[in-house]
Length: 63
Image (tube, rainbow, N blue to C red; front, top):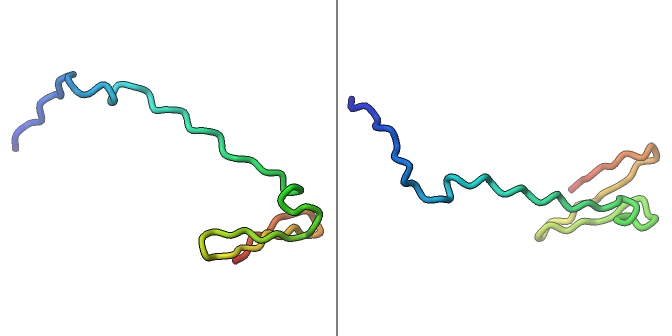
């Protein structure tokens, strides 16, 4: 089996640049999403999900 030759340094510059930093994720306050209610509906395509806050302050997302 032939041995692999070391790669020349003539690769395009895109291989030498550091990866771009990812943007921070969007952040929403649950109080803004629920607007005083204990649940909110979230649409993803044709699917509807329910985000609910329990009495103990935990969040539950259901389909």
